[in-house]
Length: 211
Image 1 (spheres, rainbow, N blue to C red):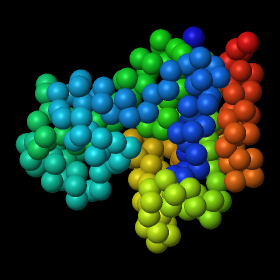
Image 2: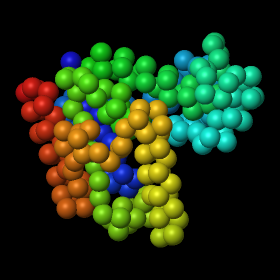
Image 3: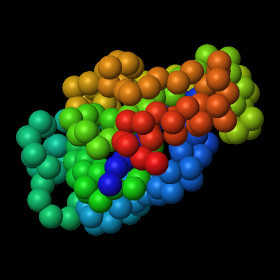
């Protein structure tokens, strides 16, 4: 079986395109379910895991969490269950990585974000798609979707893009914007979301040998 990973700039239409790709390929879309399953495996509240989803800790935060857990700042996460006060982004990222690898072994999934393009970079049975877009188009989508003004939409785009880039760089040592990580980089401003989904499906079929 095969897996498609989709990375996206905030407001570039990642969820809509991912849903369309999953439907066309008869795959299952995995998005927030990753954080929920990681929380279940770690024995913590899913809301806590979702708050740290696709987020790497700052150095100050790492130190504070490590002291609370009684561990070295850059050591391994404590074994067993993770109560709320000691759950850090490292534990969540490691649990998420293992889930992504399990999904790839099973096949038949579209994985949205969570550094999956980096986790599965060396596998031949995966197709990696990146969605980008002009800031003005992304702002327009975010303003309509989140029902916020332009300044708040700008903040959301900046913060989410920065957090996702930091997450991939921190845990996997990769540049999320590196085009060589992907089989295709699709500009949803030029193509539109429907056309981007169509091209993504075609790329995935070709790369993975799907009929």
